[in-house]
Structure formats: structure tokens, C-alpha cells
Amino acid sequence: MAYSRQAKDFVAISDLHPNTTHPRVAGVIIGKTDVKSFPDRKSIGFDRFTFGFTIKDSPDYFINVSLWGNDGYINGLSNSFRIGDCVIIENPLVATKDPEKEDRFCPSTPSFYRLLVSEAHSQLSISSDIEMMNRLLPLLHLPVKDSRDFYSLGDIVANGQSLDRTVINILAAVRSIAEPKFFTTADGRKGQRLEVKLFDDSVTSFPLVCWDREAIQLVQTLIPRETVLFISDARIGFDSFRNCMTATVNSKTIITVNPDTKEASLLFSYAKEVSESGVLHEDDRPGDVPVDSISDVYTVSQLKLKAQENPEVFCGITYSFISKLDLDTSVSKVIRSRCSKCRYQVNEEIQSCSNTACPGGDQPLTVTTGFDLLVDVTDHTGTLQSCSLNGTVAEKTLGCNPEEFVSLTEDERTAMKWKILLERCKVYIKIAPSPKSRSGMRGNVLQCSLADPGEVKQNMSALQ
Image (cartoon, rainbow, N blue to C red; front, side, top):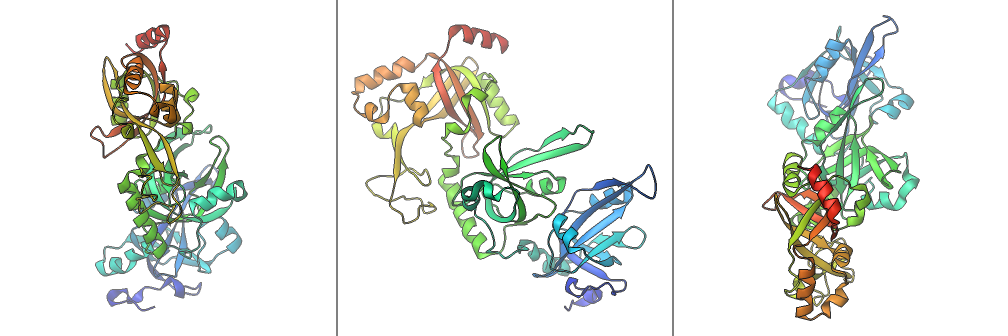
């Protein structure tokens, strides 16, 4: 491979060989692992430190790089660059890799070799050469595996536990990114965990778990609902606690952000349409959160404050009044029909879903009809406006189903409204961030029932 100008003396990854003397290699970092330490067998009582990364210099060639040394050297180097940087490696040792060991713990590469960098013999620096960066940076958007070789999230869910402990490729869009959780292990080591929710045209939410600091730093830069990922060699597992399949980033995984492929482009268009349609915000499935697992009690102002301080989904109980409940308005504003495939609101007379991003495509329209109400929840500290009260939760709150409600007279609907309005209720509520709403949050009622006065007094006293 020929390089221009001063880059002529760089050796292409495809041309590397153990007999290459004093090689200079340039590439863009497409993957990187955390620093680890091991007892030094030569110096009892001391540790050796190591980390690795993967560089790419052409669409088809990339290679793994290992670095070993003392604490200061290794941690200093690791902190000086990250995924996406263009680096120059001078005088690394070109070693023949052990395919069985290398491919088990490191990204699979097309090269027969790996590069070893040591403090005594090698140098590593970040390139600021514009011509080199213009050539290398587009490689970040080319997956390291065949762009057609992936599982959809629907495929993973359908295969279920038969995929447990396997390593596969995934193409999916980013739905949301949680805050990292930090912990200390029993032997005193510090760790972290971050969960990303993925989606595609077959599944609306699927967990991707990151444990490594490097992976966490990468995904924290992503923009939810505007980013597509090709995840090479993700480990699939069954989470028995949540009773669902999950994907985990491991030492073999390479994450390609917004891949330059036809498949990714189609998914990006779908993700954009679904996001703009509001379908991703229509999370009215209370079964996802068992109410008997919710115990934290809040005032309305405390719910608002927590939502502002911590933009993650959370649930709680509030002893409040339903201060707005429009049951005596048009029936079409109380009961709505939605597409069974994408949850988009539809007009049954049209007999088709108007959502161009609907995964149902040209299939016959199937709808679900149910209560779709917006209520205000109020206590002495404030009001949560426009909280969703939907489906079976609404049926239990009102004491009737949609068919029975339609048959009621206007006076009967008004009487039903005042039977609930301004009565102290025990409201189980789910709060989620919503950038499009004026308050920046939205509430979804999971259960609502008349509150026991003694229970109200006890809990409200505890909140003073």
C-alpha cells in the first residue's frame, strides 16, 4: 500500500511481518480495553500492568496491539488517547499471534500477527496530520465484520436461551443511555456498570450492558434515537432476574458507530421516523414494572425534583388527588385505537397504519382499543400535569371497560368523574424523561386506588 508525502515510510498492516525492522505503523483506534494488573513473576511483590487496543489502516486490515509495563507508563499511556484517535506506533515488536488464545480474548483480526509495545523499545503518539486523519477517520464507520452478518433484536428474542453464552453481531439503534453505576467488589476493586437500551424495527427495547470504562466512555458520547451501532462479537446471555435476553460488551467486542452500510442507513431512517412519531415515548405497559416492587413514597414536588436531578426512569408512590379527569368530553378523546404493531394512533376507517415506519408494513391493520386518558395528579406541594392513565389500569380505576363506558349516558360519565375527582388516592407512578414536554418529564399511572386515611397520615408524616 502506498502512502503520500512524509507517510511513505509507514508500513501497512497488511505488509507487517516478524522480519520487519523498526516498523512505523499508523492507524485509527477502533477498540480499546481497560488497564489490568498481574503479579510480576520476576519481581515478587510488584505488579505488571497491561492494556490493549485495535488499530485499522484500511477497510480490510486491522491488528491488535498489546502494551506492558509499570503502573506509571501503562496508565499514563492509556489516559492519553481513546477510541477514535489516530496514532503512530514506532518500533513495535511484530509477533505471531496464538490464534486460539488471541481470538478468545481479543477482537478477531485478519492479520496473522499482533504488535507488542514496550517502554524501552517503542514509542506511541497521537497524529495531528490532517491528511492522515482524513484518510483514517472514515474507517471508524466500517464494521469489522460483514455488514450483512448480524442478528436483529427480534432474532435474539425469538431464539431465546438457545443463544445463551454465544458471541454474535448485532445491528441496532440506541434508544436510551442510563447513568453509570459504581461499586466496590469484595476484594476492594472498584468497578462500574452502564446499561444502554437498544431498539430496531422488531423490538422496542433491548439491554446492552457495558462493564469496561473504555466502552462506557464511548457509549456516553452517543445521541439516543439518532445513533445506529454495529456491535461485533457481543456476548448474549439470559438474565434470570429480569427473565429476558441481554447483550454484553466484552474484550472481543468492537462497536462501530453509525456504520456506513446500506443496512445501517435503512435502520437509521426507521429510527428517525419512529422517534419523530413519538412511538418510543408511548410506554403504556405497566406490567413492565410490578407495583408490588415499588415502595418509595414521594410528594409531587419531590417527584419533580428527582426527575430534574436524575434524568432516568424511576417509579414511586404519591398520596395525591386526581385534579383533572375529562370523562365527560368526546368519547374519541377518552378511548383511542392504536396499531397493534407500533402503538401508533390510527383511524380504523382508513384500515391502514399511517406510521410509515411501522414494522407491520403492508400487513392487514390490526388494532387495540382502550382508554387513553391524560390526568393531573395534585397534592399540597404541586401538580403533575398530563400523566397517562391507559389500558387496564384505567379500567380498574374507573371500574368499567371501554365497551361499558361507551354505553353510559353523559350524566353517568359525569357522575363517574366526580366519584374519583378530588378524592385522596394512592397513586403508583412511573416518571420518565421527555425532552419534548414542557416540564421535561412525563408520568404514567401504574395503579390508582382510593387511599386508606391511616396509611396517608403515616406516610405524609414521614415526608415532613
